Amino acid sequence: MLSQSKEETKVCLKCKETLVLEEYGKDKRQTDGLNRYCKPCHRENCAKARMNRSKPCVYQLFFTDGCTYIGSTIQNFSDRLAVHRAKVRTKIHTNRIFNRYEPEEISGRVLLELKDRKELRMNEYVLIKHFRESYGDKCLNQTDYTGIEREQTNVPSQGSK
Ligand SMILES: [Zn+2]
Image (cartoon, rainbow, N blue to C red):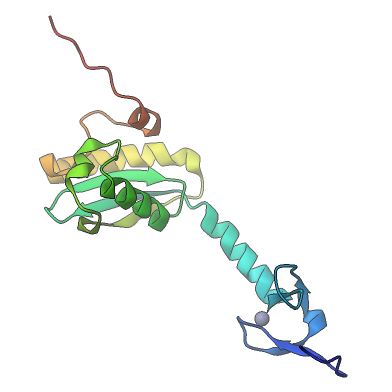
């Protein structure tokens, strides 16, 4: 245990500076009751976390057989990719065509980052059109634009007579 010495200090885990305890905010989860990061670093971490929380983007998935898929998310792309992989692993992906792959056969990248999630759909639509034209059947997006809501419900099949 730290003794009550004249000037108690602590090293910030981020900037590695040795600072007096007043430079640290309170954190009950820590054994010393103080944040592991100094106040400026803590503020920076919070700002980063806030930014990372929601980063709407249109992304492209690559499959090892040369197919591709365009999607959009308001999550981090890496989180979204992890969800795709997890669903494929247990073969419960709502987009059933995905279930023919193994998680490690899927990779991807962010195509377009957007500030406003309202612009997401329109940009996704345009990019799907573009990739359908260049990839043809290897673009796994359906002919019709399938938005997030429609991904959940099965599109009623046109019962022909
Ligand atoms: Zn610091």
